[in-house]
Amino acid sequence: MEKEAYKERFDREDNHWWFLSRRNYLSTYLSGAEKVRHAVLDIGCGTGGTSIFLNRYGDVTGVEIDQNAILLAADRNFRVTVGDAEDLPSRRDEYDIALMLDVLSHRRIHSEIQALREAY
Image 1 (cartoon, one colour):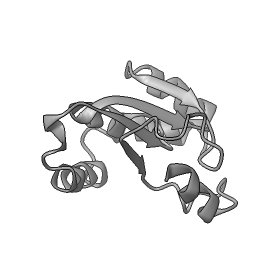
Image 2 (tube, helix red, strand yellow):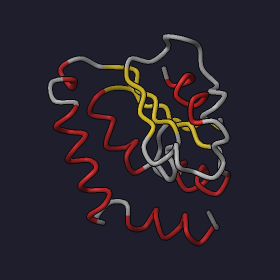
Image 3 (tube, helix red, strand yellow):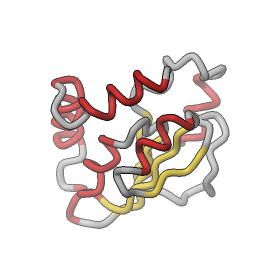
């Protein structure tokens, strides 16, 4: 994505219907998970809006490959690390919850199977 597109996403993430609907779905899917603090991995965290939402479920680490997105996500004050969905910078079994939203269709993904293996 272009730098301007990431900035637009950053500005809209807190009130655009797409992101709000996705968070509503996640709330339903993860219902009850907030009772215990989890280690959460947000693969392809983009500018970090969903990662901030996920804080209610535990300690979130975002992984993102695009430097423009990382710079914006850093403004949200959560842990973001540079990484590739096909070669995650984490140890096996380090996280309780791993999410990969809007990632598999990304042009930087060469092997959806490898990205899914990494998340697993």
